[in-house]
Length: 131
Length: 239
Image: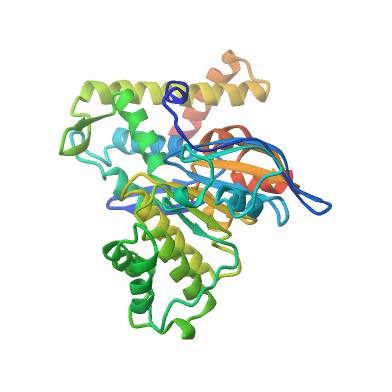
């Protein structure tokens, strides 16, 4: 696992997973957390490839994926920018939350809990935390 | 995404059922491969798996016993070789007194050699132009040899075991240099290695050979999605 900083962004690359997916995921989470402002410019393919020590093709693949999903937009001659649409970012947040819930539910179900058990456990956990 | 790209892919190298035998040893056996253009391709496998033989055939330095080879759309020949920067395994040639002399020599002899690019790369590789070539460490010399290849404005670069036997710092400098180069313009690179080390993120595509046979190949990120890191695949395949 390699950790690399690019400006204010920090990337962790794990070579046992597709690298382009990790780049996409780390941009998504930085945007949702507000670490990258909407409408702001992101590094060029070349800058990011050199900073992360990955191939430009990998970064290009990630950027194409981000543009396709509406997270970024490319302005000709100016570079790539995070979407300025708050709505787009809210949609992404909801989507990431869905994924997190599905993963959590899957893990709990692997441990043998039913949906009803899980809800009860969450509530019990909340009460404990409030105390 | 990948499927739509497939239709547009052009290949830098195509091998069809290539066989090569040296005496009693079968160096390559019925090898069929298509290597996409504009990518960095790792030719991976333990010593004796046929990596250098493959490169020698691509460069026309030896002839296959059977099968068909196409490189940059043509059969291997000295005419195509103008468009290829090739660093053979264990290459150490005399290139002059200082690094600057080596660049002058390259300017005269190597088609497409760019002085400007060489100066840039020397900076990235931390090689001073005044350095004496015969006073260089093994790692510095390896860096200079790679630099002389990479500083050529050619569509195809072939590096045979560029990381072998050199220190970590030199390996990292070389990787930085290659990434720097790839982000400058489109180039196809074939890089062979028997150990991945830090080269893992350098590869867009991987070809695994063993005893002259192809055992696995594909897009690096797709291989990672199915089997984990390329380094892990190597450990599993050659255990």
